[in-house]
Image 1: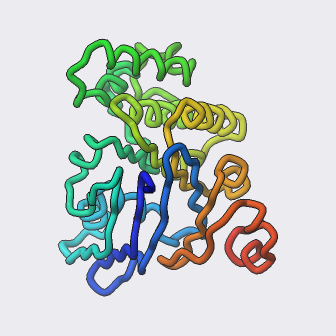
Image 2: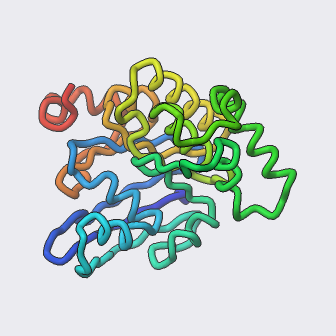
Length: 249
């Protein structure tokens, strides 16, 4: 049984179809990549999985239009597409969104502790904090610094670490490298690789297709709200139409 199973997912906002019959799976221990052109619906898919799509689509579009979700999302064998975002998070499905959004007036450590607000176990919270600093040593160096004064790369490290502070059974991370310098991207992806190596499955949405292919065992390509391909990096790179038309490689 897959850890995460998305089946025939449709997301509509008034007459606009954002996702149209999307199906994908992430198994226990897997690292899965999701790539595709800008505007393909990748971020919408993560927001739908994590329960945020109704609120965020209205905010993004500035209206009160009707958002319709159809299909199924199952996590650890349980159907979750009717649950609120906080309920999904409590079950261990963690969404680290594209916009980093730290609490700017709180310190780095206060931001991390905010990620553990659901926990009632002080020892477990401390273990999570120690893990965050081990994964991202720069955060340890800046733990007393206000988050609003961090660089973009440090804010992304903080967002990723904060996501893992409470019972992460799956990390779904959206465009972590966006706007970052190459050296910072390398540090960030090295940490994401460690997170997976330590036992946390990962669903990675990433604009850098080559990077996603290096890290993920399986990949999906999303275009215009449809999954158009699934397979290993080698299988996708062997398809010239896919390479030229959708991957930019």
